[in-house]
Every structure is written in C-alpha cells, then in structure tokens.
Image 1 (cartoon, rainbow, N blue to C red):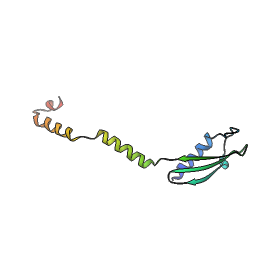
Image 2 (cartoon, helix red, strand yellow):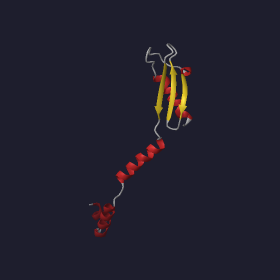
Image 3 (spheres, rainbow, N blue to C red):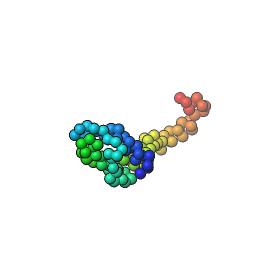
Image 4 (spheres, rainbow, N blue to C red):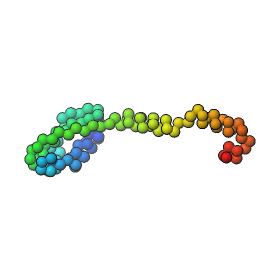
Amino acid sequence: MIYILIKNIIETTIQNYRCELCTSTLNEVSISLQKLSDTSIDLECTCPSCKTISHVHIQVADMKQAMMNANTKIINKNAIKSEDILKISEDIAHAHTIEDLLR
C-alpha cells in the first residue's frame, strides 16, 4: 500500500476516533499497526486516558480496478451502436447539402 495513503488513514483515525468508554481522543503513540495488506489495514488503538484497547479494521478499495470498472460502464453507456453507424451512412447517402445533414 502507498505510504501516503497509510499516513493519511492513520492521521484521519487520530482526528476522528473517540474512545468508546471515556470519549478521549488518540495521539500518535496510541496507535499501532497490526496488519497491512494491499486492501486493508488493522490498527490497535489504546486510549491514553483509560487504556481501553480497540481494534480498527480499514478496508481500502482497489482504486485502479474501481476506476477501470467505472470507465468501462461509461464507455459502454456512451458507445456507438452499429445501428447508429448505419443511420449516419444512410443520412450521408441521401444528403445533397450540409443543411440536409443538419436537419
């Protein structure tokens, strides 16, 4: 996983996490990285106030694959069909002027 992404996830967790028992916030030393893979991160968060330990699992989508899937859907949605090409060919064959094509 890209370092900047890991760093951003940890920083966001520190900013947004609140202890379930005492609602204290975390600091950098309160988080330890337990597991890291291409698609997920497991963090252990220890509350600096009450020492409650929480486990956080973060699933990260494969952005490259997600973008490819999104692009495929857009391309398929906007793709020219064979009927469109036949219609254009017929219109050109029957047109005598540019104005005929624009009607």
